[in-house]
Image (cartoon, rainbow, N blue to C red; front, side, top):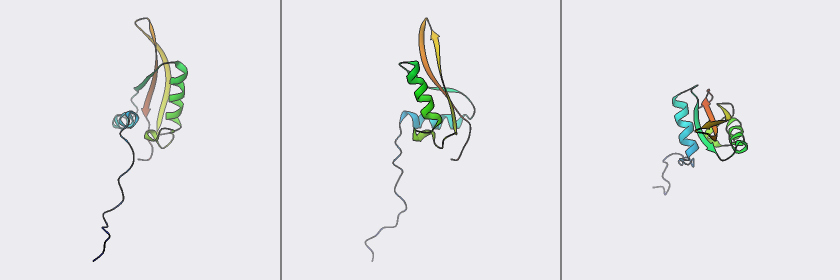
Length: 92
């Protein structure tokens, strides 16, 4: 008898981060835009959008699977810096 149990590969280390949850929800509604983040500044929103487009955040891999844009809108007289994202396809 062997001391080895052949039970398959270990589970993924992918954490259930807010971006993993958002990316999954966006995949369920392809080509529909959703707001995934409200940043403190327009610069931070733009950086987050770029990170999503380039898949520097693993939840949005592979690169090119998601489109992302940063926009500042005014809500009740207060500027809000949003990151809009949509799933456009790619390898699953």
